Image (cartoon, rainbow, N blue to C red; front, side, top):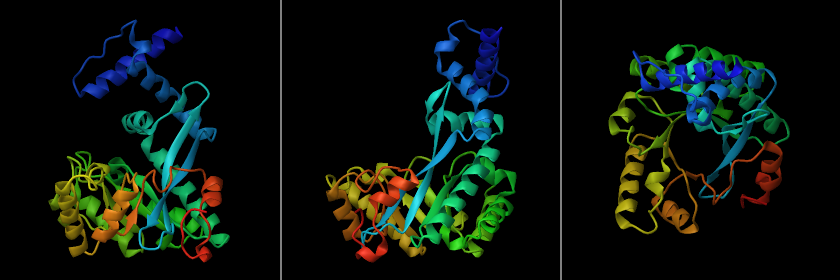
Length: 298
């Protein structure tokens, strides 16, 4: 009976994955497929939220000029007794299909605010950015939810930022823009993530109110080896600067990339060269306090 249930779950998720008006066939081979994996994740998601199965790791955003870490990005992690280590690429897709993305997203915002408050209380204040699903924007309650978390933890709005990724899921740009404007007016940062991918466009910079632009790894990968890549990155940065946006380069892995970014006037850098995502205690051990002269990792 349990096997049949798993196969039915997998078939349903396959039908959802392939679009409306589709049939999902129950196939004995499905338990070994990615659809069976998604069915397992779908069943385990509620328990993970209830039993603290999720945690946040934090990846530093380094100020290129000073070498200090004024901000971090919160990244969701999940270790499950049955499913093992589940990557965000696996569970975010399922959470969006099942509607659990709203509860999961709210947990992330609340936990990030709690951690930012803990850092502020010990004198190592860091702004924390969280990734927001387009479906959270579509629900229309994002502004209220964020303000409630800030009040619950007595956190200054300047210590929170949100990151959004443009995609087909942002179906109502006017509504999204109104919510983002309300957050910015309250002092919360709003960054456009993964800029330079197939989805992003210059028109989006006109449509959405923003405080920052995160340049996708695909734009950064070859800036130290290909002059054309450096020119394209410089053009993207020039657009951002003209609009008054701070720039962050993602996926920085080599010192030579960092040198090019510094020459181009990029504000912050993020990537394995600086640090991998870390639990809060490990991040505190790896990065010295600002009083060290701003020299970055200890």
